[in-house]
Length: 158
Image (cartoon, rainbow, N blue to C red; front, side, top):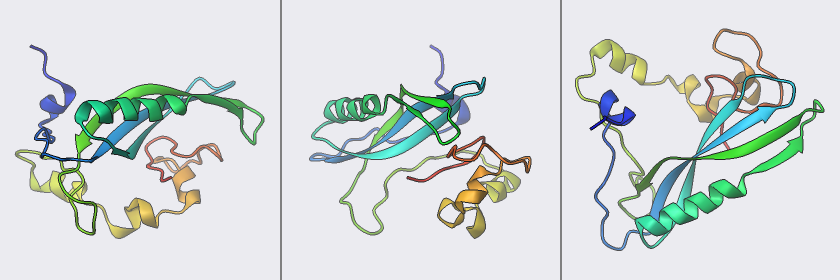
């Protein structure tokens, strides 16, 4: 049997579904293509799903993803096509929605100290503290294309 990417990386996610679970987190994958450009941009949007079962959550997440399919003209006059590509993950929230509720977790086994130090972000690198202009700057220091949220290697927010 072929191992999944998550299993290969040593990631472990939730699978126990508590009785009466009502909330789920879906990772919706959207591909953006831009007229006249060869590179695409892929967003993974984490959205909250209200559902009565894992199957219901899956159906509702798929509906939300498909609703994102569209084309429009951006401020640069390029046609942008947004295409729903599927779900990256779907997990149950194992508690009531209130301050401090754990929404999701990941587990890594055998992480070395150097990797752990890189894993933890400084305050200025947390998404909530990044400016929109900073989101446009790619990791190599060059500017991304203005107006394209979530350029190479960045995390965007809604």
